[in-house]
Length: 288
Image (cartoon, rainbow, N blue to C red; front, top):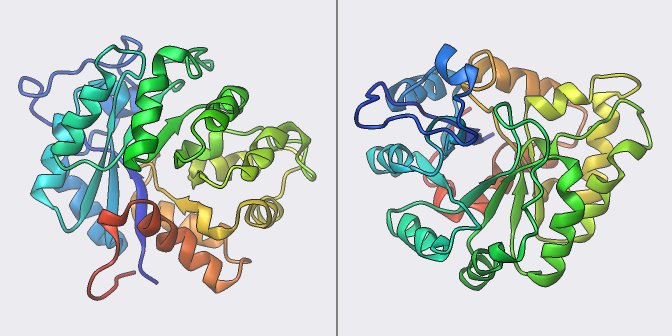
């Protein structure tokens, strides 16, 4: 099985060249406790047998300064593709999208919540962001969203307006699954499957949520695949924000999805990411 990690981060050791400028004004604890640079990420992926990876802008370290992600992609163009962060409300948002795309990156991330910004921001559906969404739709640029289920109503309205945009929800939008089947607390997440452009990023956060309360991971995954199809679900380690090595995180994820058909597992661990981000599509032999 060829494995592509859909969610990794890199932190430079050179704070003068790449000074922290975190969204929310406070740097994340994980980035200070477990910083991993480009070479460290390559070594960790090699140890895990992970063939390729998506390097996602560490927004809680560098904000919208995506230069280190560019460096990662330029250093390993056959191994990495990069996702950059932008301020979708900025007057020059479209210009910034053009700039980072021209640098070789492959889609943008909107950060509306996280460890340094608790609570779902209310700007997601603001009309000032419409030019960025329209440009993404026109140019077929995928959008990665760090958000919670509380933001899904705003996303639903955006996708009614910009129906051609492909979006990827980090951590499955951080659902509350504690009530168990039929997951009424996460109804909005399952309802978003009606929008064919919506994809889900299956990370440790979603799998941990599936272990809480009355939830059973195997049941959650079965229901999630039934709603979205495995071709709209992609695994990501969230390394190094997630504790542990990519090898450990991958092993845990493989165990969690082991009850799914082999074809579905192959999509989740590589095929979906290759389709969503064609630049990272498999070439040559496989690993893992």
